Image (cartoon, rainbow, N blue to C red; front, top):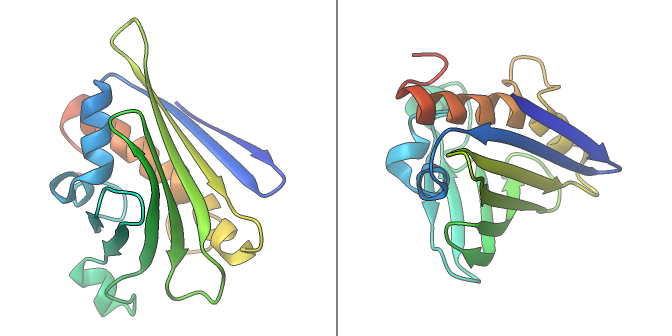
Amino acid sequence: MTTTTTTGTTKVYRVYIKATPQAVWEAITKPEWTRRYGYQGIADYDLRPGGRYRAFAIKEHQQAGMPEVPVEGEVIEVDPPVRLVQTWRPTWLDEPATRLTYEIAERHDGVTCLTVIHELAGAPQTMAQVNGDVEGAGGGWAEVLSDLKSLLETGAPLYA
């Protein structure tokens, strides 16, 4: 189950996954995993403070008009496999970069809690995108995290 809370312009998404923190970390940061769930883009991280982040669109999305690099950012903080903080900016929107934090916590029962905190002040269009409120643009973070959970727990994404 994915839960979402909102505090002003900060969105918090939490999902519990039957996987290790290392597996969740790799699914977020390794291109061989990111291409298997969500929007299936290839994540390219330079995992050090000041490092670059880019998400590359798949061919079908580019053919539909999406730029080759639809999301870019900068890594702010890295503490594998428990915390990643970065900026996150959709390149096709004229809005400032937002702050995205992944917190990964191991529980005693073989379950990992993944919390995604997206600070969206000054970026209403980005907020609509990540909320899944834009018609025909997918389900935002809730859908991506549900797909990630399915992939890690079953070996298959939601839409296999």
